[in-house]
Length: 280
Ligand SMILES: C[C@](O)(CO)[C@H](O)COP(=O)(O)OP(=O)(O)OC[C@H]1O[C@@H](n2ccc(N)nc2=O)[C@H](O)[C@@H]1O
Ligand SMILES: Nc1ncnc2c1ncn2[C@@H]1O[C@H](COP(=O)(O)OP(=O)(O)OP(=O)(O)O)[C@@H](O)[C@H]1O
Image (cartoon, rainbow, N blue to C red):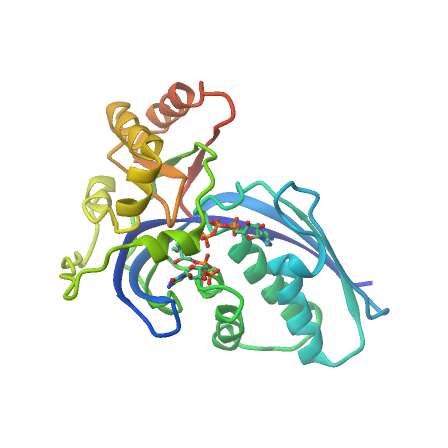
């Protein structure tokens, strides 16, 4: 029986410009995305019987066909036409519906893992084309590099090397639907895009590009997001912003000690998820 154990990392968005609403309801974006070392753990066992089982055991995440990882595995098993099946178990470490891309990362890991286990030899480009049909963030997790993402998030280019940083993640746990955030955004006709630097000397220069249009929707609706941002800056972060459609706020630090102290100060609120992680 073939078996693989995989680590599926979370992401943060350093930049999220919403450019226009498309006729298919999605939005054209310009984003900068970076992976961090907070990872879901995924085990895949390839089986001779055709059944596909995905178990997660985490509240709010479906087992079986409702799980994005199940859809990823089903696609690959159908492509292989071998009559084989798989047993997949997911241990969630990334908070769910948090703006950290957890489900998309799980799906990307399963696409890459099944490609290997089934000996399909699909290229990363082919896997990214399959991935974007499952979720707009899936191709980024196959691309892996810190990326400038355009289109709905699937057109990816490698960004200049970013200095390593400590990232404090704080998720206040309010429920934010990604579709609702995009739908609620008031778009201006001609969005002016800020010029991006050609290189980044230090963590401060990375924070210089921080901007997330989706905060215009989430901060008025959930003021706690703005409060965490302000607190993170008071606690010495070089920059602080909401990731993706939220509600997780992240702060970037060049100093590990400061990052850990900020996490401690912000994690006093019971029920909030918090972590100090590193950029990948
Ligand atoms: C907020 C981000 O995480 C930033 O990285 C992504 O833009 C969203 O990525 P995702 O959750 O993988 O997105 P999907 O699962 O494909 O879409 C969820 C919902 O978000 C909205 N959506 C998503 C991506 C995009 N470019 N435009 C959109 O309008 C759509 O209403 C869609 O129904
Ligand atoms: N493997 C999975 N992990 C997490 N959520 C999943 C998974 N499969 C399906 N879901 C569903 O997808 C929804 C979004 O979860 P996810 O954690 O991917 O959100 P997110 O981090 O906000 O994503 P994004 O940053 O891409 O918007 C959840 O409500 C959950 O029920």
